[in-house]
Length: 206
Image 1 (cartoon, one colour):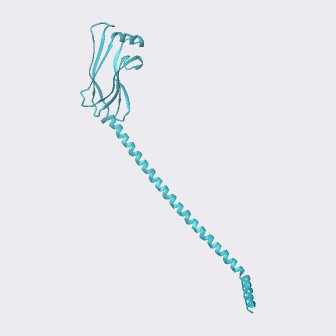
Image 2 (tube, rainbow, N blue to C red):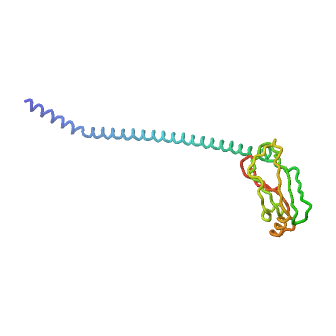
Image 3 (cartoon, rainbow, N blue to C red):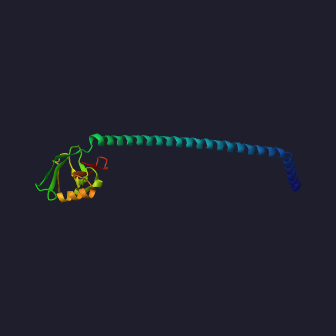
């Protein structure tokens, strides 16, 4: 009897399931649809968050770019100030004082010519002199002149009395230079190499 009763319950349950099959399928479809909607909403929120993060990163990048621009402007202003100081306040002002050329009473080619001068720093900052060369030949034309190095590396301060320079050349050498370079008269001048306030090496003929 108990077995028949149990079988009867199972059979009723099967019949109930068959009758409600459409309901269960509809309910399951509804659950799947709700799950799909939930996932779509979640993905939409994630996309919005990602967009917000990207916008914030773009804002940070823009601010960093603006900071770089400001730093570049500051650097350019500092460089401009340094260049202004180099041109005016800290400009190198080397000046030759007490220049004169003497020679012994003998005639060429036995004569000996002596050039003397004092190089002074009239600027506000010490000057690093790389070298001082004496040139003899066509004035301010190194291609038609002979060079003799006088000074190599020297600091000249503004309060120094100056750098005494002396250069001697024989008449025989002068005639040889005139013949070699095809010139009628030799001039004696100096070529000074020094560093300005920006550290750039300058070559100047005086």
